[in-house]
Figure 1 (spheres, chains in turn green, blue):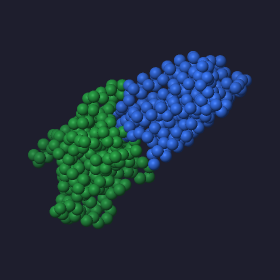
Figure 2: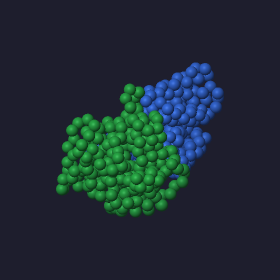
Figure 3: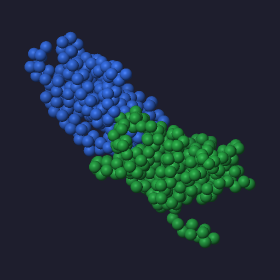
Figure 4: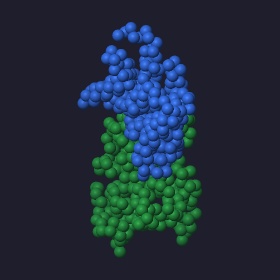
Length: 260
Length: 264
């Protein structure tokens, strides 16, 4: 009970209340989502394709407006507060043939507000610092078309960090990279989690179960207990099928699971 | 061949061509990387409505064109924001509505003149000193704006969604980019005419994109490519006694094909 009181007294960084959204009138994509994200959280959201994961992220970023319910960050509506949010989208958001180099891409993360205020020198310096932080130094002058999948993800992570976000949102960050690269990426996220909250959507159950502090399962509705524990029935009802809970990795890891 | 340089009309034509190339190279790079050539075609053709209206009112056709491209860029910005699902169809409509308005105005003013033919297909050899000063002014506006918002403009063309999330005024900057395309169209109408504008807006930049992988270099190289096309096009039009606009276009197509071969 004491735990409960202290838990309630903390102000959540991101707060979703009865959030619903639908693309078509017949079938809602998300229904009654309630979610509190606190400043030290590392929340992984798993769930089947078409379960609304990307839709939920888009609502959190203010790219979509909720049909009903509310979403607030730091007590402000999302379009005001998103300067506190860093975002790493999926690959397909832009063309890799675009003629820009790594430093320019990272610098773009620091833009916003008045476009006539050019702060090139300041942004460049910050971009170079962050490229070191994500272990991508040495790539500064490469064009993005010359990067491997893992390198590009590090560069985009650096872009997401340009505004010193309080919350980092990542959409399938390791879906196009090999397993060791993915593991390194999640180790980096664990490091970053010391300074900011993280929400990650991922299919990589192995990495998620190792790095994330809490796990939620989304399929139209969100099953989330502020813990790493999801019951087998939680997961199976979300995925609508039997799920093998043994993940890849050495040694084999098992998602915390209540067998009920 | 070289004696033609002593004629002031030819000097004016060369200067016009190079001024047009500066605008076309700088703005064309955005059109090519963001695949905006359909939008650009629509804005360019809407300029014809303005030229027709200017004939009807008896004012400078370039002023009429300027008014119409301003309206067209605002309308396209609104279409993209409000009715994105119909964007393609509505922008296509704007294309022919601009042309239709132009034809109606010209019918009303009873002057289907050779001049008008010049605006459709370009007659750079008729460029006057006044035209040149107007092009200088338009270039200064285009370059000044691009320079002052360079990073944000690059960001919205590279990754529109991320720019929105970063609170870059993305919608507003897109309207500004459409307006820049409109200004560039007005600059290019003198050189190659409305029908051919789209080629000079896209081909030199596409050529440059085949040869470089930095956006700034693409813009500079596009200016060079476009200048080569206008200068070589002008000389060959004089030598062959062909119309100048089509010659400029054919040279820029040749440059593009060469860049493809070089790229392989």
